[in-house]
Length: 640
Ligand SMILES: *[C@@H]1O[C@H](CO)[C@@H](O)[C@H](O)[C@H]1NC(C)=O
Ligand SMILES: *[C@@H]1O[C@H](CO)[C@@H](O)[C@H](O)[C@H]1NC(C)=O
Ligand SMILES: *[C@@H]1O[C@H](CO)[C@@H](O)[C@H](O)[C@H]1NC(C)=O
Ligand SMILES: *[C@@H]1O[C@H](CO)[C@@H](O)[C@H](O)[C@H]1NC(C)=O
Ligand SMILES: *[C@@H]1O[C@H](CO)[C@@H](O)[C@H](O)[C@H]1NC(C)=O
Ligand SMILES: *[C@@H]1O[C@H](CO)[C@@H](O)[C@H](O)[C@H]1NC(C)=O
Ligand SMILES: *[C@@H]1O[C@H](CO)[C@@H](O)[C@H](O)[C@H]1NC(C)=O
Ligand SMILES: *[C@@H]1O[C@H](CO)[C@@H](O)[C@H](O)[C@H]1NC(C)=O
Ligand SMILES: *[C@@H]1O[C@H](CO)[C@@H](O)[C@H](O)[C@H]1NC(C)=O
Image (cartoon, rainbow, N blue to C red; front, side, top):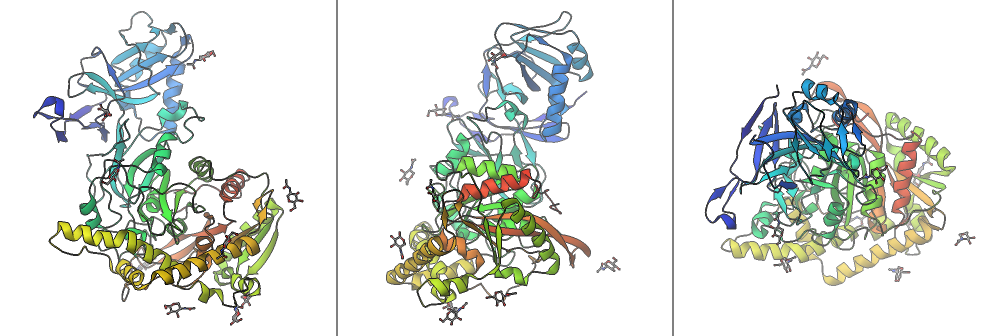
C-alpha cells in the first residue's frame, strides 16, 4: 500500500467571503517520502464529491479510442515514469480515465489487473463504460491534461482538482523564492518548504501534462523557467539584489510583456532567481553584502558563479528540474554565467523583447536573454520568445573570424577549440580568418584616428552608471529616506562606486559617450559584420571568454572593483547592440585545492553576429546539434 500522510498548513486568513474566519488556502502534503505543494486555485471543481477521501492523489489519463485496454493504461504510465520527476506510483491511489472522442468507450476487463497490481483504490470514468465486476465512479466534464493530480476540498467545502507541485531542494542556492501564477496572472509564493539548508523549496509541475499540449498554440508548454529577480511579477515583491529595494517598493502591481509572453507560450515560471545587486558587477563572495551568491556546480562546486544573472545560470547548471534561466545582459550578465557554468546562453540584439516592468541598467544596451542546457530547446525558446523581432534566413554565414584572444588560451583548451573550428568551417563551407584583431581593423577603417581602447574606454561605464543612477539610484535614496527617517539605503560597494562615477558625469559627457557607442555600432555594421541577404550576417566573430580557467569564489579582493572601463571581445556585441551566444564545447581538468581532486572546468566559445541576426545564431546551434557537432550538457559537477 502507498502511504499518504497529510499535513494541513495554515497559510493565509480571512478570505472576504468568509469574514474573519481563518481558512487553509494552500496545503503541503507528503506522498511516500516526497513533499508536494497544493496551490490555492484548483484546475477544476466537481459539483458532487465523488469520493470520501479527504485528499486523493490520482492519475488522469485520456484516450481517443473506443476500446481501452490494460496496455493503453500501463504504457501511458510507463511513459510518464521515463520523462517525469514528479509523477510516482503514489499518484495511482486513484485513476481517472477519460474518453476524448465522440460516443462512449469501453474499458477492457484486463484493466482490472492493472488496478490490482497498483493498489488503485478509486477508479473514476468519464465517457467510458466499466467492465463488470469493478467498482467505479462516473464523472463528467473533467477533461484534464493527462498527469498526476490531487482531489481535495476547497475552503468552501467543494470537491476540487488541484495540480500538485513537487517541492525540490535547491542546493545551489539559486533562488529567492518558488512561484505559482493563478489564472488571472497574479503570482504567489510557494509557501511551503522541506528541510533545506538555506534556499526555500521550489515547486515544479509534472512534465506529463504537456505531452498532449498543442505545439502550435503552446510551443513552450511545460518549460520550467526561472526568472532573474529584476523582472517584476504582479503580486510579488522584487529585490533586484538589494534588501532596501525590496522593503521600499514592496509588491509589484504589473508583470511586464517579456514574462507575460512566456506565460502565453505555456512556460511555467517556477521561481525568482538571484541577481548581482542592481545587475551590476559584484563578485562572489566578497561583494555580495546583501544576499549570498549562488553556487556554480561545476568542478569543485566553488568556482565563481559570475553574474549578474547569477541565480538563473547556477539553477540551469545545477538542476535537471530547471529547463531555462531568464536573465538580462547589458555588459555580459548572461554570457558570464553561461561561460563559467558551461551552458548555452544568448545576449540577443537590443530590442529583442520589451523590457517594460524590468529593472533598468542602460536603456540603450539592456537585453533580455536566457540560458539552457539543451541546444534544441535553446533554439526553440528564443525563436518563440523573440518571434516577430527577427527573421530566419535560408543560409548560414560563410566567413569565420577568430579573435586574437585565442592566442592566449591553454593548449588543452585550444585543442577543443581547434576541433570545433574545423567542424564548424566544414559544416558552413566557411573561410576562417585566424587572429582577427578588431583594434587593427578599427585603426584601418574607422577614420576616427583614435585607438578603440581609448575611444570606447569610458563608454560602457558612463552609459550604465549615469542612466541607472538617474532613473533608479536617486529615486531609491529619496524613497528609502522617506520611509526610514532620512536614512540612506545600503548599496554594495562596487555598485556605489559605479553610481558615484555616474553622478560625476555631466549630461554632455553622457551624450558624447552615446555618440561613441553609435559610432562603433555603425562601424560594425559597415566594416565588420556585414549584411547578407542570404545569411543575414556575412560573418561570425568567435572569441573565448571561458577557456577552462578556474576562478574560486573564495578569492579575497583588496577593495571594490573600479567602474568597468575598457574595451575587449565581450564589449563587441554590447556596443554593436548585436547578438552574442555562448556554446559549451568541452571541459579540461584542473587540480582543486578545495576538493583535493582533479576536477573538470568548462570550455565555451562565444559567437557574435550582425545586429538583428539572432535567429541565424539560434538556427546554427540547432543545426550543429542535429549534426552532432555540439551536444546538450549535463547538470551538476561535469557538463559532459
Ligand atoms: C478523436 O479521433 C477522431 C478520429 O481519429 C478524430 O476525428 C477526433 O478529432 C479526435 N478527437 C480528439 C478530441 O482528439
Ligand atoms: C480573478 O479575477 C476575478 C475578477 O477580478 C476574481 O473574481 C477572481 O476571484 C480572480 N481569481 C483568482 C484565482 O484570484
Ligand atoms: C502600478 O502602480 C504604478 C505606480 O503606483 C501606476 O503608475 C501604474 O498605473 C500601476 N499599474 C497597474 C497595471 O495597475
Ligand atoms: C595576432 O595578432 C596580434 C595583434 O595584431 C599580433 O600581436 C600577433 O603577433 C598575431 N599573432 C600571429 C600568430 O600572427
Ligand atoms: C592604432 O593607431 C594608433 C595611432 O594611429 C597607434 O598608436 C596604435 O598603436 C594603433 N593600434 C593598433 C592596435 O594598431
Ligand atoms: C580608461 O579610463 C580609466 C579611468 O579614467 C583610466 O585609468 C585608463 O587609463 C583609461 N584607459 C585608456 C586606454 O584610455
Ligand atoms: C549611425 O548610422 C545611422 C544610420 O545610418 C545614422 O543615422 C547615425 O547618424 C549614425 N551615427 C553616428 C554616430 O555615426
Ligand atoms: C542579394 O545580394 C546579392 C549580392 O550582394 C545581389 O546580387 C542580389 O541581387 C541580392 N538579392 C536580393 C533578393 O536582394
Ligand atoms: C590529497 O590527496 C592525496 C592523495 O591523492 C593525499 O596524499 C593528500 O594528503 C591529500 N591532501 C589533503 C590536504 O588532504
